[in-house]
Amino acid sequence: MKKEHIGFDLLVFDSENELSDQEKKLMVEARKARKNAYAPYSNFQVGAAVLLENNEIVIGNNQENASYPSGLCAERVAVFQAGAKYPGVAITLVAISAASNTYTVMRPAAPCGNCRQSIAEYEQKQKSPIVLLFQGEKGPIYRCSSVADILPLGFDNSFLGDS
Ligand code: THU
Image 1: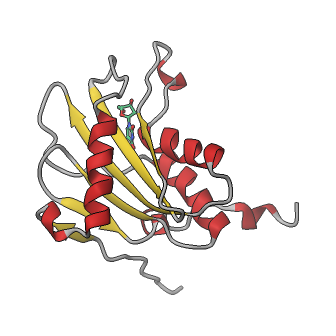
Image 2: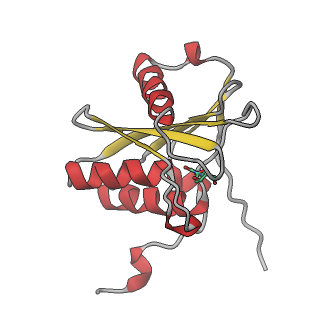
């Protein structure tokens, strides 16, 4: 038996002033997108802003449904829209902002498992890392330099053989 350690470096920024101008801009876009979330059931609004290598920005927000599982998270709304609008253009960064109507979200809300899996698909396809930046309404900003960092031992198409 041998033990292997899987870990990653999470960057924690106390203030957005520590971010690059481009990262700051993406966080602003994510916050703006959050305002248009449709979240009447959870009262938890999420906005996502995707930066592409052609410098286009594509946004998304969570879209809920009375049939709860039919809704979709902000991150997937955004990356699917990017894939639909700019096929083949690599994603460089996804900024995510979360807030609630019922309490003040003071810590960064990391993408859910399904969103990690969906973003990881694009990372594998484009063969370059997708940076994630996420923040609550207030408090620190977390930065992961690759979605693979927060989806260790992930499943990808290499398991599907030659098909
Ligand atoms: N949500 C997101 O939009 N992104 C996440 O990564 C986590 C959760 C949404 C889904 C649902 O509309 C609400 O937040 C509560 O789960």
